[in-house]
Image 1 (cartoon, one colour):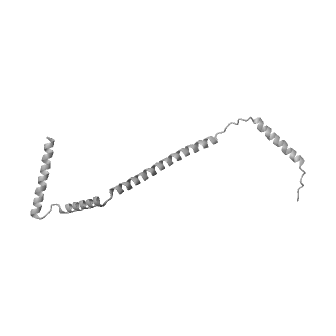
Image 2 (tube, helix red, strand yellow):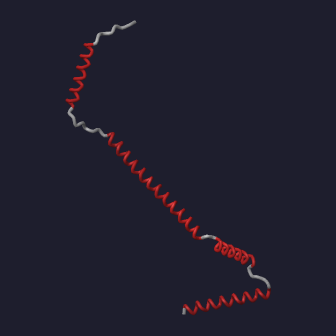
Image 3 (tube, rainbow, N blue to C red):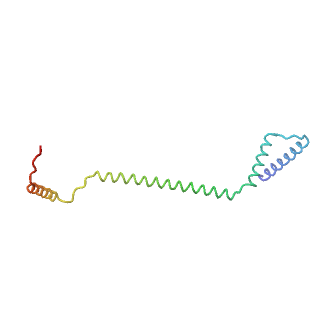
Length: 135
């Protein structure tokens, strides 16, 4: 039933087209003249484009442009990822630097070093002659 309906619609449209063409030929006038003229110009322009445009070169240029854009976006996203990791590591290093690390060496050795340095300074003062103040 659906096929019969489609066939009848097609026949009705074809009959209407022939009737309209016959009527316009007898009267020398076109129905919807401005719209049909604009449509004719659009069809002529489309036909001109189809005949004169190199679609292979156009397609190559568009694929190149799209690949360039995708490459740029990938580079941008990877740079943002690297910057995010950099910020994370910077915060981690800052946190680790602010924490106090307990010294593994005993405090006695540090005191011994200070004591030895103090003794050396004392012996150094004793061996130098005293410089008089000049007024």
